[in-house]
Amino acid sequence: MLWETIRLALTAIIRNALRSFLTVLGVVIGVAAVIAMVTVGQGSSEQVSANVESLGTNVLVVRSGARMMGPGSRDTAPPFKLSDADALEDLSSLSAVAPVVSTAATAVFGNNNRTTSITGTTSPYLEIGGWTIALGRSFTPAEDRSGANLCIIGETVRTTLFGATDPTGEKIRIKSISCEVIGVLKSKGAGSFGQDQDDLVLMPVRTVQRRLMGSQDVSSISLQVARTASVERATSDIEALMRERRRIAIGEDDDFSVFDMAELSSMLNSVNSVLTGLLSSVAAVSLLVGGIGIMNIMLVSVTERTREIGIRLSVGAQAHQVLMQFLVEAVVLSVLGGIIGILFGLGLAYVAAQIMVIPFSPSLNVIALAFGFSAVVGMVFGYFPARRAARLDPIDALHYQ
Amino acid sequence: MSEPLLELRGIERHYGHDETLVRALDGVDLRVEPGEFLAIMGPSGSGKSTAMNIIGCLDRPTAGNYLFNGVEVATLNRDQRALLRRHYLGFVFQGYNLLPRTTSLENVELPLIYKGMRKAERVARARQALARVGLEGREDHTPSQLSGGQQQRVAIARALAGEPMVMLADEPTGNLDTKRSVEIMNLMQDLNRESGLTIVMVTHEEDMAAYASRLVVFTDGRVVRDEKMHEGAL
Image (cartoon, rainbow over all chains, first blue to last red; front, side):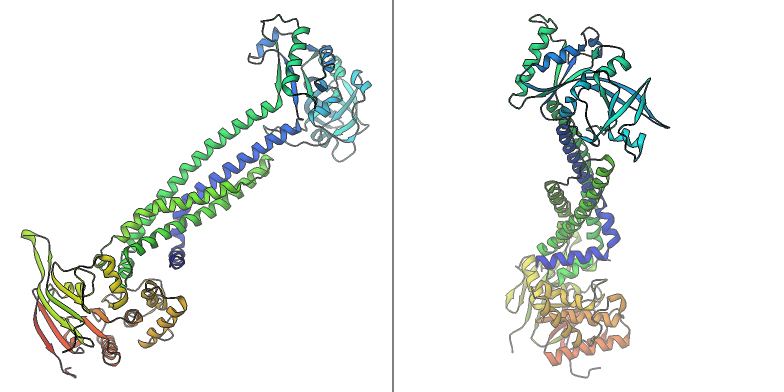
């Protein structure tokens, strides 16, 4: 009998295909929006996690200036020098140390040029940042310390300047210096904020300091925590060493800060999930509106089909069977809407994932939830019209014109 | 005298109350025996349709007793009356009352669905009923593809399919021209004579009432005439 009722409901829905479609449009849009939001949200948080791994595991960054203060506070805090990086190398809780000097400049090769970020550093930077060499080689320890005019370029820079040709051995011009390309970094793709991580040029730290910046300062120091040590221990070792080197008295605040990349990623993730939740709840409201649409049409349907109800009652249908018929019809309708919405939402999320270059990761839980929710919408908003149909007086229903 | 199939004793049906009280039925006594073909006539407002609704278990009397095959109907609730209609009654209406955009076969299957019959048996029975009313080959036609007479035949097939004890026909020829009306009445007469189906029909046309075996006339909510008719009273 239930199967019979479902078949009957499908027949009624197909007979009024256009009206049925318009009825469920609200549910379709609601479900599609929820599915798309959540799927894209999950994809981007997966991307954040992947990025953190691509930043390297157990990575700390030390910067001059207190963490909670604005940019102006850095004026009073002395910048780091290369000697600070050297001192940190002696800490047993760290396995790799790389001073970093950052600036932006235009790289030129032939008629091609690209404004990119220039990072002056040493070879451990690659290990800390999780970079691998795709072509050519990295800096040797001697080159790390020298001011040689050498560079390693990112994938984006390579494509823009050299196209398909092999760039190793070629010379590119950055500001007034001409430097030889010794290697190409393997592509990492887009970062957490959608930025292009491959848009960079690495040069020996001294080259950037002398030739581009004209100073002995270091912007930050990237560090990798040794496998044998905890992030907490490494952090306290660094703080102790830096307080000593910078002569900070006991009781005074640090004039530098240590960032934990994992901490940064969890912060990004929580921002992400708040946004996803917010957008999903907006989408859920549209699902509710869709449900009210279904109720509206089902009520109209009861009036329109009063005679049909009368006929059914006259051949012996009981009130609960008429109730069931209309309820099943509403549920079948909204479940169909839910299925269409799920497919539509997944499609939308897939396209968005391609555009935003994030993984497409549909969640079975969310799909099941959306499906269940659309069934519940049908049940809740189908009940009132169905009850009205079931309570019709058979004589009145039969003579309704 | 055999046991009556339908027995109405002092049936009253009132609408409204106090000053606006209308006594649609005002003490009706009626016995219908198995195999009878009863025609109910009477002017508008005489209570013949109200009586039909009560006989059809669509309505309940205000007072009096109505025994269907010995069972008191007046005290049954809505669902129990629905079961009675499902298993023992078949309806034919003036306006045919077929489901629109639904094939003849599906229309005839409808009461069988509520009887809980399996699909294969339903189809077989519905085909048989359609054949009985002369609509073989029209199983897949929807009401809009059929003439009025054919639609009424589908309705009769629907009433027959459930093998009821009584067929109730409310002005079955009211929307048909004379030729089609005669065809329908011949069909009903055949069903009554050959299959022994008990029929209660409301009509306002004497020509149609003449096909019945007994005539009951209502006036002001009472039975004023009740007589057996002879064959060929036409």
